[in-house]
Image 1 (tube, rainbow, N blue to C red):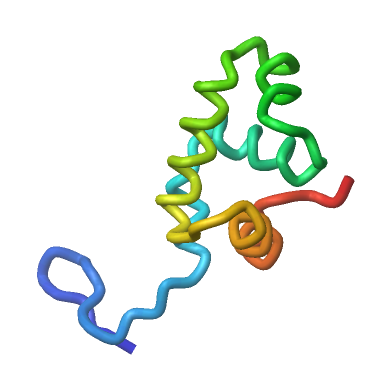
Image 2 (tube, rainbow, N blue to C red):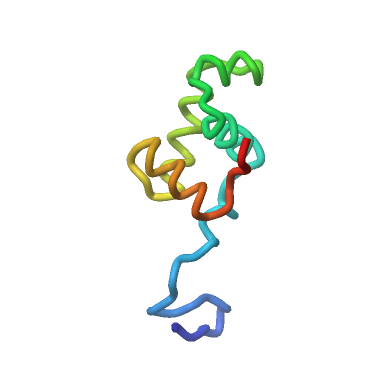
Length: 87
């Protein structure tokens, strides 16, 4: 494991664990749950009363934050990280 420096940050050797999910906003977690439920972007937009472009932007932001490149990886990361609930 790494050691903390004077600024409280972990040094080299730090393992990225559940820290990833903390970066998701409430809206991103909501959209992630709807993706997990099998809804398409258009359906999510209709349900949340937001545009499809906004849904796509949230999805892209989540994928960037979680360092994944497709929806399958997004859902796998969400499942293993405890970010989604069974429906």
